[in-house]
Structures are given as structure tokens and as C-alpha cells.
Length: 359
Image 1 (cartoon, helix red, strand yellow):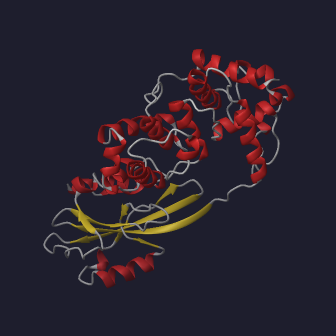
Image 2 (cartoon, rainbow, N blue to C red):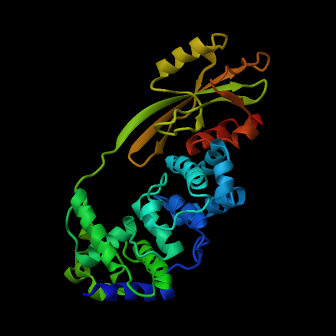
Image 3 (cartoon, rainbow, N blue to C red):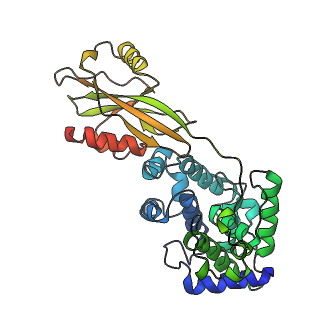
């Protein structure tokens, strides 16, 4: 097995069998490539497609994104998940405008200094847009490489991860970089997404089958090796859905800038039914807490945590309007307003299903 033959096989395969129809492909615009790379992190292509176009419609370039309020960015991101990506996206655009004169740096080393851009994303942008000879190592590419090389070192160990990065660098094309690097990078992504799957890989149609050491041993699913597993946890949240029926509004508060749903709007969150009841009595003593109604609980699955959400509806009678919002405490929002706010997907779905008829 020789490294140049691997790069050549991937480049040739991508040209005839890889994905070439996605809206961010065949573009050397770093803004569009960067946006797609951030959205595609831990998110399926089918989900990203609609969000990608809506973002470009609202923010066609890095200057318009940098100038937008964070709330507008989060609102467009709502439902895509992993909201730290949206906050980093916004901050990154501002840094590009402030420190790089509105032009993305051309080297992966410089790109990796920007908010939200790690080494692999930096490599993708530099490869696609500027043909720099740098590797990527996202989950799909990591799986392809470890199988081709039968790399069985534990990737939970930092030095082994660094070794794989070094090997990935050596595998990159060495000639005709202008054309080969974008094609090679896309090809490695495509192989991992459509052929070299985590379970039951399609080895017979893989262009690297003859060179793949894992396939030769008949054990491709043994790679990659990672011993450290993140444990799942569960948490119960109680949501106070305070509704001002007189004005057809619901009370929403901005979440802290750290933690789950950071920076988004949601109903007030409590760790227990009792804590919710006590807080409601203290904040709104004029409300009739006997009218509280528990809505059906449901679970929202995060990457490593299950949120068990318990909505509790607290209505004000139509003849007794809810009090005005206190400065900085939150806001009352009707259906038209919350539609344009940055809301977590389960909250938006809850409000639309339970309170939409108020509008």
C-alpha cells in the first residue's frame, strides 16, 4: 500500500461516484463553505439543506451576519440544535470583520484560531477554498482512515489521535493540489457517509478495498478504537407556561449564556414541581395557582442527556391581564413574536401545539 495510490483512488472515485450536487459544493467561497461545515457538525445533510438556504437568504455574506443581532441568528438556527454553534458562528463573523478585514484567512493554521473553528473544520475550509494540503479528521474520515490503515491505537488517548493526524497529512495528494485537494477532501467525506459506514460497510464498492487492511482481515467494524465512552444522564425540568389570555401572550425568559439552551428564550425552568409553585407564588402573587394545569410530559433527547420536560400551564383570566414585564426579567410574546425568537425546538413545538389556538 502506498499513500499516493490512496489519494489518486479517492480523487478518481469522487469525480464519478461522490456527491457533487449539494448547494455548498463546487464553491470556493469560504463564507459558504464555512457555513455548511458548521451546520453539518453532528447534523444530517437532509436537515441542513433548508437551514443553509434560509441563512444565505437572511445573511448573504459575512458582513451581514456579523452585523445581525445574536437573537436573529439564534432564531434562524432554532431547531438545528447544538446552539453553541450559532453563537460561535455569529462571533466568528464579527472577528473576521474586525481582525481580518472581512476576508477569511487562507491558511488552516489561522482559520483554527477563529471562534467555533476546530482543526478539522479549518482543514476543510482551507482545502476546499484555497487548495491547501491539509487533512480533515471528522468522524466519517476518521473511520475511513483507521480502517484503511488498520489503525488500532485507542483514539481516546491524545498521542494516538495526534499520530492519526500525522498519517492523515501524509495521505493528502502531493500533486495538482488546486484540483486534487478539494476533490480528495470531499471524497473522504463521501466515502465515510455512503460507503464506509459504521455498521455493514459496503466494502465491495469501495475504491480502497484492495488497499484496506481492515477489509483484508474481515473486521472493518472493529475500527476506529475508542475506549472512553461518554455516559448518558437524565434530568427533569419543570416549565412554567404562564399565559396572559387577555392579550394572547406567553411569558418567556432568556436562558443563561452557559449550559443547555444557552442564550435562547424559554418559559422559566425549575428542578421540581414544588420549586415552580413557590417561584410562581413569589413572582406573581395575584395569579390563581389553583388553576395550574399539568400538560403531558415528554422527553427531549440531547447528545448525552435526556431531558424529561414537564410543562405546567398557568392561565390568567381574560378579564385580569398579567402584569407588565420587569426590566431585564423577560417578556410577554404572542404567537407572531415567538415565531421570530430564538427558541429551543421542543419549546417551539410545545407553544405551537398548546398555545397556537390563542392567536
